[in-house]
Amino acid sequence: MTSGEDPFVRENIVNDELLSAMKKMRREKTPDSMTDVLLKVAAARLLVPVDVKDGRYSLNSVADSKGRRFVIAFSDTASFEIGKKDDDQQAVLSSFEDLISVSLDPAFGLSGLIINPGAEEVMFGSELLKMIDDQMKGGAGGTAAGGVGGGAEDGAGANGAGAVGTVGSGVAGGVQTGGANGGEAAAAVSDGAEVGTTQDSNSSSKSAVNALNASAESKNHLPAGRVSIGLPNRYPEGLLEKFKAFCEDDERILRGWALFAVNDEGDARWLFIVESRAEAGERDYQFETLARFMTPYLEGIAPVVLDLADERSVLAAHGNEPVFSRM
Figure 1 (tube, rainbow, N blue to C red):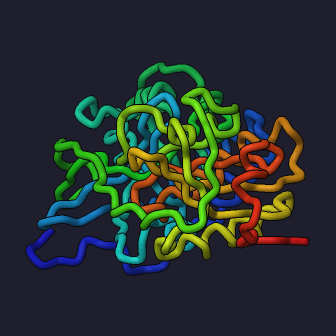
Figure 2: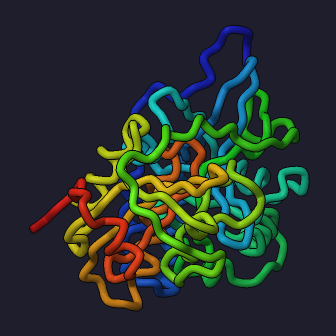
Figure 3: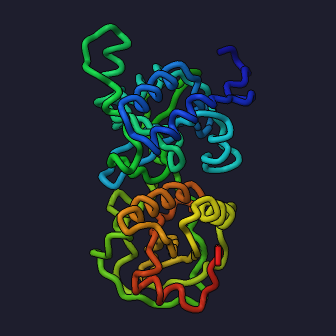
C-alpha cells in the first residue's frame, strides 16, 4: 500500500449467495447446508471491522462465556452497517484464507472466526479452520463441513467487541494484542428499585453475555449485594434504537425494558428485561443473541438479559414503562 492510500472499504459489498446459505444453515443444520456455507465463504470477500488509533488498525473480537475469543467478519456491507459498534468504525476487505491465518496465529490467542455475530452468525472454531487450512494446502485433514457451527447453539455464545491485535496494510499483519477501551458508564440510576442478589443468579442472567472490555472476572450476572435498578440519567447513543429494532424483528418478543443496575460499589450492568413467548428451551439462546447484539452500544458495560417471568424482573420493571411493546 502506498502512503496516503485509503485502505478502507468504500464500495458496496454484496454476497447474497453467502448470506442466503448462512440463513439456510441457521434453519437447517445439515451436512449439505454446512458444505454450501463453506463453498460460498471460501470464494467471498469479507468485511473485517477495524479500529484506528495512531495510524494502526486493530481487529475486533467477541468472546464466549468461557473466555474464548473469535475474530469478527461480516458477509456484506449491509450486515456490517448493522453490526458495527459505532458510526465511525471502518472495515477492510479480507479473503477467508487470510482470516484463517489470523485465527490460527498463536500470537492472537484466538479460538476461531465468527461471521455476522448476533445475526445469521456462523462460527468456525480453530480446529475446523485448521482442517480447512490443511485441505487448502493439500493436506489430509478430514471432512471440514461437519464442524461449521451456528454461534451460541454450538457453544460460541459470543459476547462483545474487543481488540484482537494491530495490523498493517493487510489483515494478517502485526501481532500486538490489546483490549478495547470501554466508554464511561452511564450516570447514576434515577428512581431505582433495590434488589438483593448473590453471585449465583438464575440461569437466564448467567447465560447473558458480558463485554470483553469489562473485567476478566465473569460478569454474566447482576452485581453482587444490594442493587439499584431503574432508568439511567442518559442512554448511550443508539442503545434504544437498536434494542427496539431487535425486539421488533423477533416476533416472539412482546415487551422489553432497558434499565440500568448498579450496586453500592459502583459495579454496573445494563439490564434488559424481556417478555417472550418463545419456548422455554429457546429463551436462553434468544437472550444470549440479544446480549451479543446490544454489547457494541453499551459503552463497555456488560449486559444482563432477564426473563420477565423472573421475580426480580417483575420488581425491577414495576413502575417503568417498557421501551418496546407489541401489545
